[in-house]
Length: 59
Image (cartoon, rainbow, N blue to C red; front, top):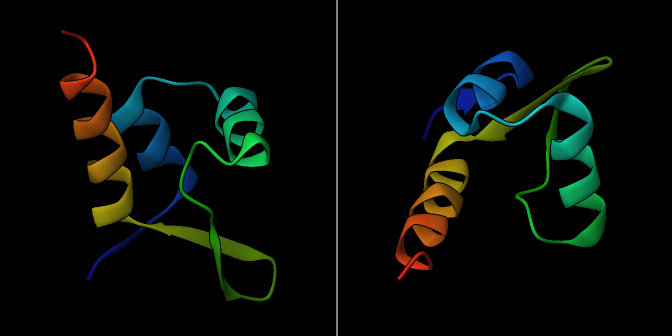
């Protein structure tokens, strides 16, 4: 398992910061997890699964 920071999530999804947090609030995007102190990260596999789901839903 690999943890990725917000900058990498933005790069992988092409979404903006506020959009990512908005989707998380709606429950439609993977939740972040605490790393240390105020630092947070996402599981890369969950973000990748979310992207794959969006691609499959295109058709």
